[in-house]
Length: 128
Image (cartoon, rainbow, N blue to C red; front, side, top):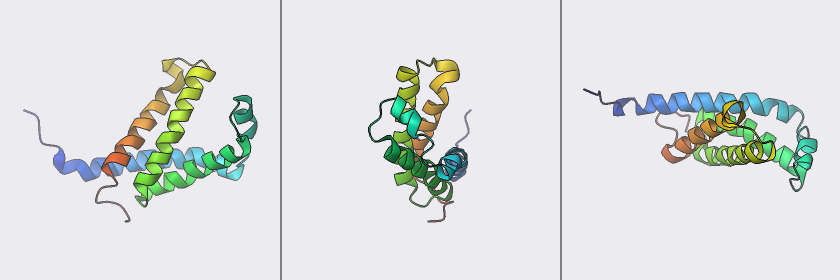
């Protein structure tokens, strides 16, 4: 017999927020310290306005991570993070010719987690 897990919904949402938030804070911090650090790489991938995109990615990842972690503007931040992961997945799969293993599986997992939080929200254990 399977136990009813609905009572653990807030715990699961909290764990998901902590994992996704810390992951993006960790990956966003180096980009905040050097916001134009991705500019050359984005230009090589033929993205338009690479300097602006480099700054946008830094802001989305770092401050979006904090928003997800605290639950403040979580759904908006989760949608932006999901968009970031869609682009990262396509870049790795099609531009860098990566395979599933050691390629873009982490990006897809982070995308799924961000979409889950965007859909279900922060739960009761959030600052707002």
